[in-house]
Length: 572
Image 1 (cartoon, helix red, strand yellow):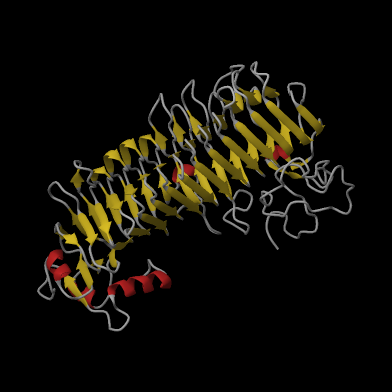
Image 2 (cartoon, one colour):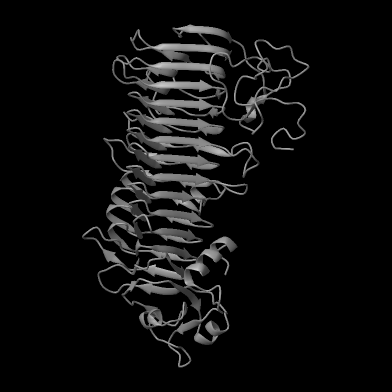
């Protein structure tokens, strides 16, 4: 079967107890040669495999409490007997109120349940915390593959609800689309330590929730992994978490220790694209919303792009001690010049901020080796860092971000809060060039903020820093390039006021030219040192024997030039 690798196949077969015997199956359809004409009787049979034809639409309502493998898509039972799949999926739906598929295994050992090659639709269960399409609980290891879940409505989980530490779900080559939740989780609702893996050509797409998590809602230590995405232009993306909407967390809402790993690979990123937060007066999180201690996003080779919020956090909203880590893998990827992308996220409101990300109330964010471009907001076009939150940026290329208006108060980065409780930014090895705002960094008037800018290139047609009256901010600029330094208070050391020399800035190539003054410019004496490789995946600190070190062997900015490498934009 095309959907699962050998490791997963072994896990399923073990769950079905099939290592010691030949697979036995029954057929379901309308012909005289079929074993059954309904799904319930086939489920109750002793055979572990059920092959289902497309001859009828099935609406059987029962609880799956034991291991079973349902495969749809056979034109008739003769084809099912001969393992010949047709062109269409089998249909499993509800014709009255209720959830379409209920899985609640109660065996001592985990029960493997597989739904392969089905359309699951028509469920409507909008009361008592119920889902519309598929409900998963108990000691259940579930795979839904090659399937389409759509037009279902629930209160918690329009498409799918999964609950409990013993429950797990793999969505493989499956589309969860056009489902709606009257409360949370338009596509998927997950809680209480359940696990969900989204792999292959899968999508959580065009779902909606009245409150939170248009695509996915996860809480209470739910563990999510999404590896799906593609490289198409943003409005043409087919796979990943796409075009969902909710009041908060248009694409994903995570709280109470829930975690999400977005993991791309050599061929494509893991995508969160074109999701929408609808609130116009509160924290939004167009793409993702995270809140609470233990809540975490780990994004590697990910693409968070063209998400929209009306007020705060176009790409992401990160709140109340939640954590975000975003970087590229140390190996070739889908586009080696931009393996990790945080781009074109928008806050549409006149007073809104945090085009790429809104970070508030002791949240922690680490974005490294990422191309950050095209983000938009009237204030804090890129990052809004507020109230004891911490943002660490290392090795990023930051270009073409801008504000909507011509106000003199526009900025790329806002740090604010209250006295003794301000925002904190560490800005290491970044190249910031060709953005539009009056100020790069802006301090709120009553906060006590900390800003460290080391080993970076800031090429900006405007002021570097706007203080807004506070006298207790801690600013430290050391080793790199600035367009101007008169606006800066605090320590300014070894900053050069010339162009660093790029390969082809006019065409967007901001790698260092061979004669750039940024080569072998810096050391790492002012901070604990680089954690990641450069934006191209090359090691920091290459000491060019043809260049006299200014302070040390580390190049300023997002790129470390190594003339010994054969492939400038890839790996040997």
